[in-house]
Image (cartoon, rainbow, N blue to C red; front, side, top):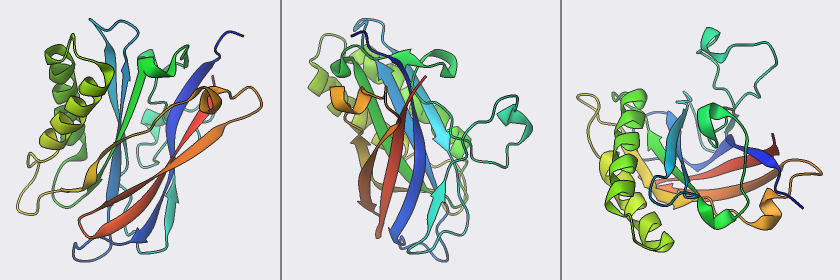
Length: 207
């Protein structure tokens, strides 16, 4: 059976323990998606979700599913469930899970600029992929994580920098997770860092 086109998006976050920052958390998430089908010229994109304000221990926040006929740009105050996988946000089949790399990074928002953090991450990803051509998949993923971590350490605001919450994690895909013919499938990552602990859930949906 041919692989179905899918979308991959952030569904929700849950604060298990607040970070060490003063006051409530204001987290945001960056999802990096890399298509390694062409290992020499891989496609990559970074999608920003958030920030969410006033998040306390035990609270959850969800993205809002996109509605037909609604342009997300017209309502930027809503954190939409944007597709992080595929060209220009369009659904795309993943015939081999090994050819897709999905990486999840979380930040605590203070005086930084999340959009700038996304741009720095995208630049680091493009450079990392160019420098890692010829390496194994595992080596490329390891380098991507390290380079994203470095990019997110660059201050994007003053005086209180945005802080990394833990390290970048891979949202590992499998044939079972991509079998969404009967409905969407979700998977949760646990991110620990900066004194906090979060559960981050992504959802795979038939395109």
